[in-house]
Length: 251
Image 1 (cartoon, rainbow, N blue to C red):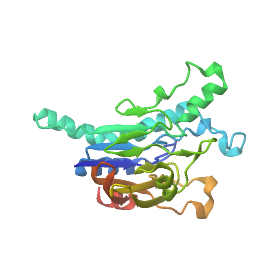
Image 2: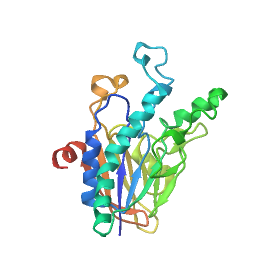
Image 3: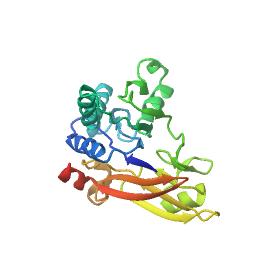
């Protein structure tokens, strides 16, 4: 059966230490999942944030710095796989080439919003600037189905398209197994379909080490890590939470 690794929001930004992503790359090599799903907001794109524009904390931000930070982070994540495959190729051994899917998040979508709001930027900046060439990139909020499981950066509800914010509501509204990012920490809920098969929903939106100023002291106390989904088939799977602290210590 299919094994899927889900990488939650990394929110790579200038000045961050991305060595933890190399540990994740080593973990991926050790477990060799069939599919890797990067759930979005891998890049933070803080220079295009509309929430703190004009504040002192906004000073010094630049689009180019954001892109370079994302590239540095992606290199840290994938270099262990690149090096492994180079060795395998040299000795004519089987290489590790999982399916790699990336669902763009609202942070990456800041690029599209900036272009829509200022047509002078059209042709100057694009999500193509992001270092996602090795991934199957899904547009923001497009749902991708893998082994009967729905993946998206987040799922929406209502005419305003607001994010569904609880794992239980995901099951109630979507009636299928769903995996989302976007929110810090983790939530999980279980249910059953009419045919008796299990449904599981996960909201996991934090796989990074830094703290976010806007969350404050208490808001930054949340779970950080990734999930490995075993035995994925027709919407069912066995979930395994992998804390970032464990990966850093062991890989």
